[in-house]
Image (cartoon, rainbow over all chains, first blue to last red; front, top):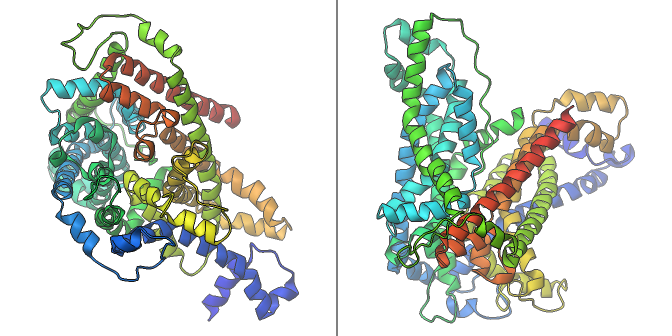
Length: 302
Length: 309
């Protein structure tokens, strides 16, 4: 009971009301009303498009293309999901995206954690220069090197191959991984490392026996963020991939073809969007605290 | 991917013997080698190559026309290129609209979520949902909602008497930019709010208590305490959002393809290089984009320096 009272007090504080009004229960409710309305509005705004995708995915085509619009599927169906999942383009896309995002994430983590070890636990000349390089890479506009990458990929015979994407995606996943893992490395206390050195461990042993297990949560978070970035990438995929069986998920989602070429099969498209975003959302929600910490650490310190 | 993590300053350590230090420094560079090699190969070399291409008439199918050094010709053409000029303008309009709306909305949301209420945890989780959705997917979801005949926005607008009749939001030139901005605003505002929220949470509560004792109004507290102390978080957020918005590609591509009246700088560049195969001219556009984005960085950094003094 006391917690409720406390919550009420803090909530009410921003809304300035006269004291007498605040004491009466009706007044208290009226004072809180705009606040809760605002909260409700934010909830609806953030979730409605997603609700609409789910609603459209479960609505049969015949009801989807009809006015006035139904706000809830009257005859819910799985037909759209079956339709989307049975197309070979979409099946390939799920597999391709998993391969690309998975490889990019693993390579970035492997190379990135070594670099983060150097940047986070060693003191040497040029360290801050490397850090600045990595930071400037995280805001590097990918479009700025499209022309050169395009000819390089053709020269390497990677055009229209998944390898082209694994290669080019490193430009945004690796610097990001290095940067975030460095901050995790720095956050570790020095005692354990010192103790290991005293016991005669080599720096590499210290790295994978002491430090790596300690930053495991950081690896998971960083890996997830890199995976999401690679999973969502569109510009390079659109530029370097041509064959439908090599499509990644974003390409498949934008090129969905129905039975007739005149009408976008929105029911299936929405079913596909639900299928590809559910795993991302689930992972994000499970790791939300860590993701928030990883993404916002710097904004706080300035 | 906008990351704004800043590693904490290095812990000070005792001075060691120099030979050990040298050995450690060599090891550090060895550990950095793979990462630096990848960055050099995937980013720095292509950047140099792009700059070089911008002075040539390089074509994707180079066999047809032999590649020549053309000096500043591409840049001269670019200067007179009315499509590129309108693309710059379109991109800047998009950036101004989205960054300002995202900031204003994000600040309101951050202030609301920062107060103590039941359900704050779920609220923060909900805010991450739009962020995790691929931009292309978000664009498709909105394209369907904005559909001129079967779209929910027209239906709801007409039912609630906000709209007099259904609009073709995406194909009408007057509403196209607004429609595409709506997607970006929906997807990014929660993230902006989360960044600002992180900044709000480190402002000491005692300051507000003291201000209450001194009889300062809520509005005064906001202007005199919240805004000044939130300044670092605000600046970081604005910089990252601006840089992101200036290179926008995905939403515009999904909404309009290469429709001429709604091209951004990135759209025009990609269609020049990949669509038309004009690698040389496209590289000049790339360099121009790079410089324009660099200009914004310089403006922001100067602004921070000047106001800090």
